[in-house]
Image 1 (cartoon, rainbow, N blue to C red):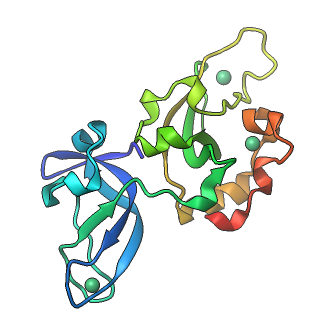
Image 2 (image 1 turned 180 degrees about the horizontal axis):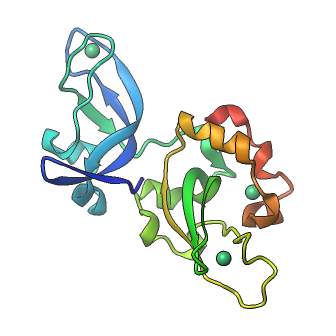
Length: 189
Ligand SMILES: [Zn+2]
Ligand SMILES: [Zn+2]
Ligand SMILES: [Zn+2]
């Protein structure tokens, strides 16, 4: 969600969104996990209906080929990624004070924070389940660990999950919940 790129001199961030085709003859609607929206609009929490076409990168309708379509709603919330009506699963990038960095497809942030489009740097420790640094785990001096950014889970992240697995012993959520992160449906991705 905090990836940025410059295009037409506008800073944009990647956010999942719902689209509809602007061609009256076509009734296509689709969900796109990679929709590029102006960062300034996201920071100011401007809702989809108040965006102009300049505020987001165009997407083509796969059904009729129409190129200039309507962004209906963002950020998209996928019900299958919600845990206990309160937490939302994302793909998070983590950093420890010791400089160790890692990515986790089992990063849980408050659903409210996600819906309010609070990007990585705006989150406080209360907004997510903390993970431990596996390099520092067991050391006496406690190092600072932060969730630096996150994005919506996309299909291509699935391989990471299966190849590297989830280290429950380093996960704040696994420690306090009977149901381990890995037991969440893997078909959600
Ligand atoms: Zn169409
Ligand atoms: Zn560390
Ligand atoms: Zn876990």
